[in-house]
Image (cartoon, rainbow, N blue to C red; front, side):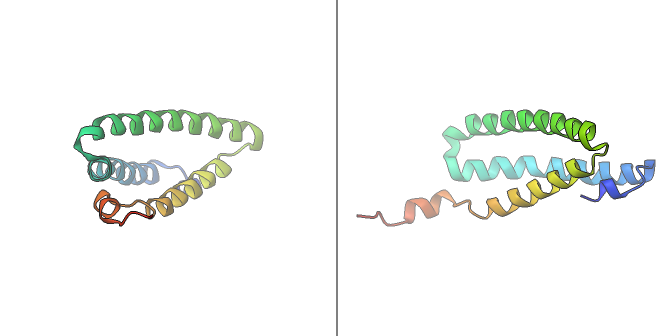
Amino acid sequence: MVVPFTNFDPISLAIFSIFYGLDWVATGPATFALTNEIFGRRDTPVVVSWIFAAHQVGGALAAFGAGAVRSFAGSYLLAFLASGIACLAAALLVLRVTPRAALVAAPAAE
């Protein structure tokens, strides 16, 4: 959400690129570990594949949507803000993830 408020100069974009790259690299192992914990070792490869496929489709839709917003509004500001809000919503949704151990240990409702 900070990028649209910078000057888009090489220094600002380089700093953004470094932090974005570190963030992206850091999420892969965590995603795999969380998926492994929730879905088990047998199903994790398929689930991770679907996660990354959905990520690619979402990225394509976001790029198209940002271009459409730029054409309509003349600026990427709304697209950047919508992306930031979507990221915050996703971060809140992660709090609803329940580990497999908690699901197995929960007593069955009769």
